[in-house]
Length: 256
Figure (cartoon, rainbow, N blue to C red):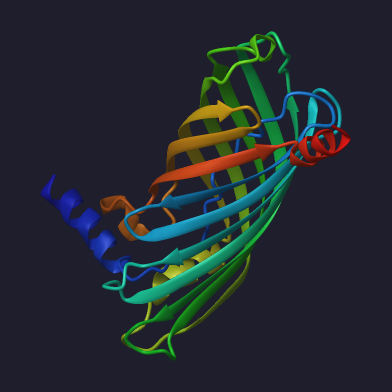
């Protein structure tokens, strides 16, 4: 038993300088109800190590099919770490929802493709770096419940449980290391095994004011570096907003 504990802590120690290499996109709920609906939304999320900013849009091609795109930026602020990190990603997805005006519970299911870039620079020596690029395919299932359906025409709370699974391929791994740099063996392991599964699960609570929705959320994501097994760097909490059909509102006002 002592031997296995020793091996576990040895692995964690060796991996402690492994930089982050993947940016987790916030788990997005479309907020679409019928054909022609569209919205823009944004979110701010933070963990013990990083801040994520996200901006996305949704458009209902039909009453049940949705086109979605998303841009995410990550900045690390844990300056007592051995490196500074920043990253960005872009996703597009096409999804189905069974929502209707009289339903309280409904689902959304998306299939998508994304790309991302991650840059890490050593705080001890700026000549040391580890940069990663990847593409991915993903599926996201959203389980949604609203206290009042659309026919009741009232402001309401809603609850969402999004689950996302991504298959990631790292097509770019560049690094420069000295004795004080990143853990070379871990980077080499990723280079030799460039395909990974990532999973995210979250909980969102929202409140709607007509076509504006405010949200608070929390989410858990697969660790993106070894030391996150013993920290909270893969748990995020955040705030979000969504504004739906804003051009239609302006048109209606101008016609009056």
